[in-house]
Amino acid sequence: MIKIAVFAFNPFQENTYVLSDATGECIVLDAGNYSAAEDNALVNYLNDKNLKPVMAVNTHGHVDHMLGVEQVKQTFGVPFALHGDDAFLVASAQQQGEMFGLRVRAIPSVEIDLKGQAELTFGQTTLRIIHTPGHTPGHICLFEPESKALFCGDTLFRESIGRTDLPGGDYSWIMNSILKKIVPLGDDVELYPGHGAKSTIGHEVLYNPFIVEVLRGDVNYKEV
Image (cartoon, helix red, strand yellow):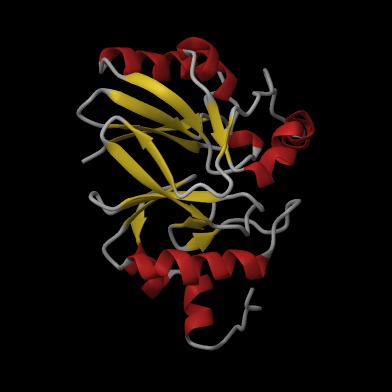
């Protein structure tokens, strides 16, 4: 079973997750730490728990999710993993930061391309990689079957979905990702999103207006 710690970082209150297991190895998912205080909060947690980061991983390449990636890489000497279809977003991090009024300290290099990969491992843990384009072309979710935990980034939120009006976004893609790849995982799967409170797939099927309007036929989305 994995252990999950969450930190709400930067002005966008982005959820940064530390996923660890009994071996003490861990990954830092969507490192959005922005200030010295946030850097210290993350590093102190890892040190206090005697955890060994082996990788920085991102669900996607938007700047609010990668503000602290380079700091994690430099502090712990770990590689950065991202789906290659979002490499253009990493390259444009400075411009994204200017658009949203964020200071980008450094643009991290990507050492591990997750495109086409089915799994990601650390310690005794295997996470299933699910490609969920729509919010961005290279967006992924990470699923841990034993814990029934899905780290869904900005694809799906509690009673909402990710924006599709930014470069590379597409409404039909995101709805296809949600309805064909996420919902079938089962009602009892817990959702850990990139912003806001966690939820379950069952809750979203009942109360997420974007899902409900499609399921009851009020809105048709283009199959992809």
